[in-house]
Each structure stands twice: as C-alpha cells, then as structure tokens.
Length: 169
Image (tube, rainbow, N blue to C red; front, side, top):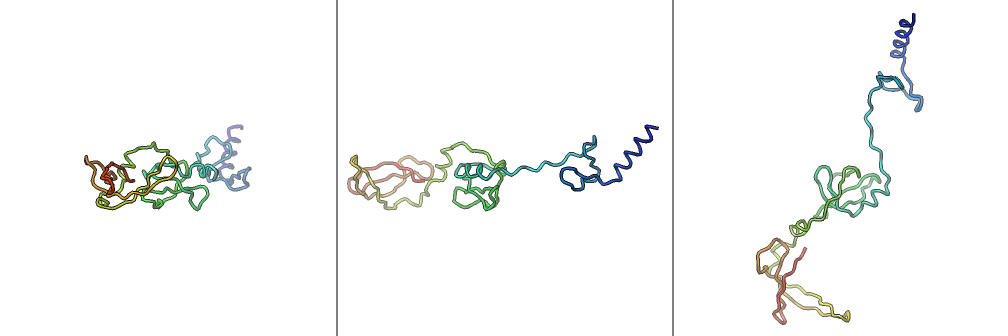
C-alpha cells in the first residue's frame, strides 16, 4: 500500500546519513536535503573585500560596543581597529559591519583641548606676511578672559602687549 511505502521511505531517510550533493560531506543529523524539515543554518557573515576596509581607513567610526575612533587596518585584512582619541589602538578588532560613521561634533574637539597646565607657558608664534615671508613672535599663554572649556588661552605678545584668544587642541 502507498501509505506503508511512504512510511518505509521516511524511516530509511532518517536512518541513512544524508550526504550533501554540493560538498560531498555528511549533512547535519536530522537534515534532509530539500526536505520540509530542514533546520535553519546560522548564516555566517561573509568576509568583505579588503578594499572596503582600506576605503574606510582614516574615517571616524563608532563600533557596536560604543568604542569610537579612526579606522586603522588590522593584521587580518578583513578586520580593522580603531585609533582612539589618545592615539592608542582599540584592544578589539572589528568587522566593517560592526562600525557606523559618526557625525562631526565640535564638542569632541573642545573637550579634548590642551590642559590648563599650559597657563604661563612661553610660546613662539609664526605670523606669515602677505608676500609669504614672516616672523616669529614670543607670547605667553594665560587663562582666557571669559572662562571656557579646556584648550582656550589668552595669548599675550611680549613685544607689543597685544592679546588674542586662541584654541589649542
């Protein structure tokens, strides 16, 4: 009878080790090629071409774990690392899919400005003339007139007493 033949065929398919025709390897237990009960296999992310990573190098990105920095090629040509704001490299390496571009935020730069410890420091400033010549001038760094975030200084020139506020990142 047809019903008995179908049951026998089903039993023989379960006991026989199914072979994948494409790879010539044993299929996972319980999997029957093309069968209705084929288990969903976890899709492995494809490695992206190394050229995509090289195009990303130097761009500011944020990883899925929150780490943010500039993309640097890792030892593995399909992965990259992030150069942090203090120029250290991230301890982890990332796949390009794990990274998202970040928007420019001037607050990041202002927050990473030079420390106030530079107050009282003597600096030399190059002023370029219109004819591409120029001169060096000596100045002293002081606190800005209005309190601001790190990096802002009042630059006082020693020779003529002129002052200007500058930002040092």
